[in-house]
Length: 249
Image (cartoon, rainbow, N blue to C red; front, side, top):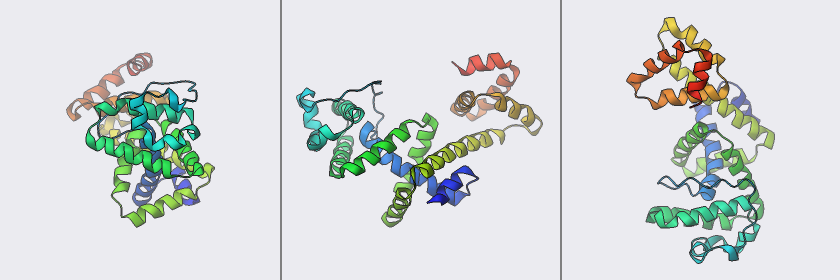
């Protein structure tokens, strides 16, 4: 499946961009939603554990065991970070609505039905998803919604194509999606800039680090449309040091 990987490194046309982003979103999110229990309502921030250790089933509280019953038989096969994510999901159970609980239960049942090899692959994709920026994750979620609306046969075909990618092709593809996301964001901003100020605005953006550029775009997008131009002008008037300080806040 070198085609998608190659497209990720170059300029994607609209159909290819749609298919590839939807494909990656489906494969990555299918796992991310199971682990993080990302159901309809926003979940509470998960506790960060730098070096999670294996969690014995007997160490779970009774109410946690009841929620996690679908994965009891495979609990000892799960990676420590997976166990922690599932436990956090069980702890959020009382705050979930009926639909959210049904979704979580169904995802755990599906997870338990997979072979050990399938679970390993999906766990690796989950880790890939976690390494994306918040903006990239949001775009992946949006793409997943579009993917989920496709006919079942087309979804299966796209999943099969992703499965045939080598690890190197998948990595190159995901990097390409990230690059396309950044280019699209800058293009969106530049369309609003008066022609005579585009050169200085591009120079400012070019002087930013990737993290600063992402912070600038996020701040710009978060504003009402009528306030975005004033924000850009204010940032242009600052010195590079002042810009860096403003974007670090």
